[in-house]
Length: 370
Ligand SMILES: Cc1cc2nc3c(=O)[nH]c(=O)nc-3n(C[C@H](O)[C@H](O)[C@H](O)COP(=O)(O)O)c2cc1C
Image (cartoon, rainbow, N blue to C red; front, top):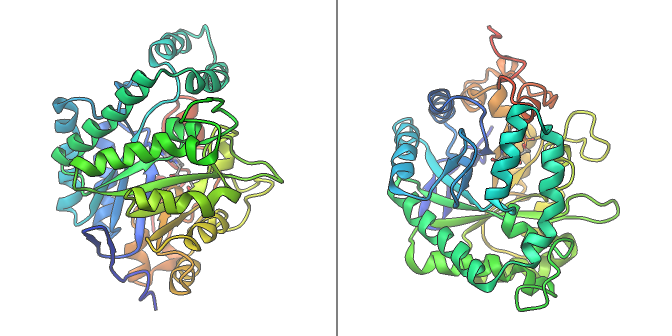
């Protein structure tokens, strides 16, 4: 009954055993708990796990992952080994912050001492993005692009099977005319705004054999959602350029730098209410590429997901909160134990809100027994 969901798919040279992915998710657990969670997700049969937000620059977050040296690659190798032993494949989501990390590290220290609230810090970070992107020197652009390349090579050493380039954060802010006011070849038109990302892709492809998935962050107008990323109307122009640069698959979602609840919508979101709420964005991408397209956003029902896959709307399905709520989702689907699935209700209380407010991370379902 779930033949399509359970069928293999090729991304670049990699074969995934089925169509289910754990969407990039920063888990607010300790490293040991994170590894246990990934192991459980992989043991349940999930084909691909993407480790979220691995910075290509040194991270000021104690719990954040980065890939800037061999020691960090060694730490992540423990994660990739655990996932491989459990039968899964693993992607590294590489991202670069779109703020001055030295400045933000000072604000972060102020948050810890209570001099600044987490909301105020986020506001200060958002306020500075436009200037940061617009005033970045050509030397710094090249230097950051080169850090993506060295991070990609370190990801390969750390045992990752593929890369996911995060098309939000710095790549997304360069891509967006709302932030990028440059007048050189890195700004002024949708193609120029995407140049930073396109060059990163070709530079990685020149030296690193790993397949690259692009997390394409799309913003839409009327109503307006997301500030970074590419405009929905520019998809026909820009998706072929990403493919030409060497992208092997797309992971499609709404862009960021608005309200976090727009990218991770709660049950009561005014616009993104239904299961598969971002799949209309995947539809637009699918019309302009032959590469696999992965959908994400409020996916949780086995029948709904299998239908979207079997009617060709998407080639892969990614879930974040549903797999936080129940890492055994796929095993329960395969074993026809649907009624035992802890269904994510998109409350965000113990995952997103806990992460934002530095509270204990988890899920409201934790401890539920059958
Ligand atoms: C706790 C949490 C952490 C997340 N961390 C990341 C991240 O590191 N990188 C990323 O691109 N998206 C991240 N996301 C967004 C998810 O990948 C996904 O796009 C979003 O949650 C919508 O999917 P869902 O409805 O299946 O949760 C995170 C989501 C959650 C709930």
